[in-house]
Length: 425
Image (tube, rainbow, N blue to C red):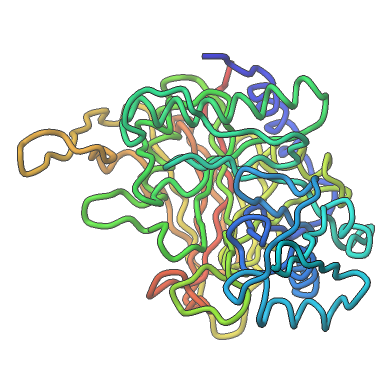
């Protein structure tokens, strides 16, 4: 498998950059959203307009195996493109923007391309649209941010797509294809692994094998991606700690960064168990609201993931991780600094099925891996590395119940990016 040294360079540079006062401001964005270009239920410009009006600064419409850069006519039905969707579309945009025709006795509407609807929606310093694709196979989904040419999913065989070897091959294929396109076109772009617990598709042991990927989803707002895991499957937080410990501590790789997304599909007339907008997002600190600046900041780790908590500041210096929370009246905040110390118990055990054979689920590891190293209450929190940490990350948990939760009992949270405690060479 190919190794991408620019990721290691980004990590080294980020440790120098974060030691100084970061420049720029916080920009709110979502990098996982769907429209009528695939399995969303609304028109792309309606969706983008909604995010803009709700204070988002950037958005990527990541439809399945397609980029909105070609002519497409959509047959209008009450289930897709018609009914409420069409009525709202006409009321907001009107004709001649909304183009319709009759083809073989059926009504069709033309889906606008990104190059068209970004013109009336983008505003310098306020709102930016980024081309995206969700590279979608049977079980493995990989998002590509600022993709320029569509990439089809892995189809190289390898047996059952639920087999561990095939899952790793599918992830690696998509990640490598995005990074190869970046290198060939000379345009900044990056892949990220989506919702590992969706259909229980990806284990920690599989994710850790992927080379070149710097990002994955620590939180996804779809109600059936099971961020919290269950009695048999590890939570995504637990998966992250297993991957960080192995990649940074054993393989000397750059740390994996975590995104929050909403993975929205439904924007109106939606039942409770559907994926709606506004559940998860990233806050990126960059000097400009420009795609290249946002990507550079994210690759340097100058962003955090949120399902509701807002941070005023985050600092990842050479030996300290600190943050300040934008508090709300009557809400309490607990910051946990999570990490693994060198010399931890490396033993792991597979989970066995009723037949005594190992199940294809994340193994059970020692509690020393991904341990809570310190807990701080209040608006400010910091952790100074003692010198034996492989990495440290912070998770902020509020007492405020999450509005429109993806899973019952959710409260608002935020996740910082990990600070590696050992040099990466």
